[in-house]
Length: 254
Image 1 (cartoon, rainbow, N blue to C red):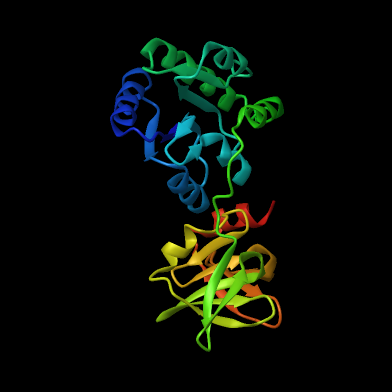
Image 2 (tube, one colour):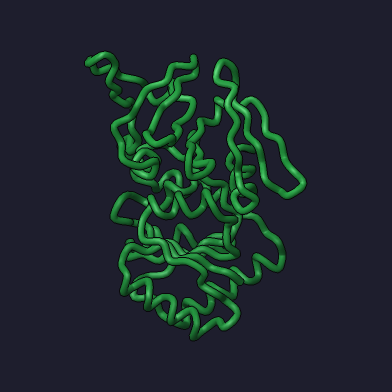
C-alpha cells in the first residue's frame, strides 16, 4: 500500500514514518506534506494514495479543507491532540483517529482496519464527510479576490472570477473572459498559483494556469497527452502532459 502523510511538524512526521515501517512492512510512505498548500498542489498533480495520514490542525489551516477541494475515497487516519469526544466521534467505518504521540499498537490496528477497507473496496463514508464538515473550523477567504494591473499609468482592478487564464511569455500575463490582456507584476507563475483557488484554477503546464469555466473542449491524444481549448474570444490552446492528464481529468470531471 502507498501512503501519504500530511503533518507540519517534521520530527513528528519522521517518527510516524518510522512507526509505520515498524508495524506494516507493506505500507510505503511515498510523500510527507507539511502544509495545506503543498497538499493541494500534490493532489492536483498525483493520484490519491491507498492510505492517508492527516494531522488536523496545520500551520496554514485545518486539514478537513482538503475535502472541499478533492473527492478522496482512500481511508484516512487522523493523528491529533484533540479531546476524547472528537476521537469517539470519528471511530466510524474504519476511519481511525490516533492521539499524539502515536502508539504503535493503535497504529497497527488502524492500518489493519484500512487494509480491510481497501480489500473490500469500501468507499469513504458519507456520514464521515458530514461529520468533518460539522467539525471543520470556518475559514477566512485564503484566495486572492482581485489583481491590480497597470494600464496607461493607472491601476486597474481585475476580479479573479473574470480571469480566464494566466500565461507566462517572458512576462506574466492575465487574460479575461472577454479577451482583454494585461501584464502582471509577479515574478513567477508559482507566485500567482499560490493565490488562486485550486477548485477553479488548474496549472496546465509551466507556462499557463487556466480557469475551469474558460475551457471549451479537451482533446485526448494517442500518447495520452491532452490539448485544452479555451472558449471564444480567446481560442487559445494549452498542452497537458501524460503525467498530469489523470489529475486534470479528476479536476475537470466533477
